[in-house]
Image (cartoon, rainbow, N blue to C red; front, top):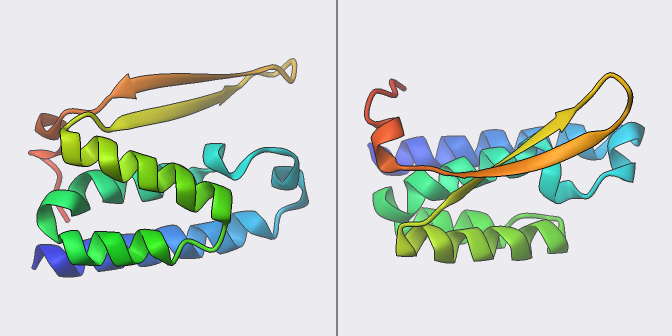
Amino acid sequence: MWAIVVQRGFAIARTLYGREFSLPILQKAPSAVWLAAEAYRRMITLGVNASWDATRSAVQEIPDANLRQMEQIMTARALLGVPVRRNLTIHENGTAEITESDITYDQFSNTQF
């Protein structure tokens, strides 16, 4: 069952990537800060323990080479138990900031699919 959840989650992340790729405003921002990148990271966090083969395959299929490389690093971090979540905050004045926080698997214990 978890393999199916992981595969569907990666499919959603890929669809989100396709939509974001087509937005001209996002072309100015690195793909590593797109919502799709966060979706990939979350699925990697779940996937490395639920279905390693599905996770490895899904990361290899990420169309953007830079994003794929970033998510390969996130895969290694998740395997070591130290996945990172990145948050992008864009303020009304146009400034932006990226913050990082560690994700613990306890945060997923109450998640319902």
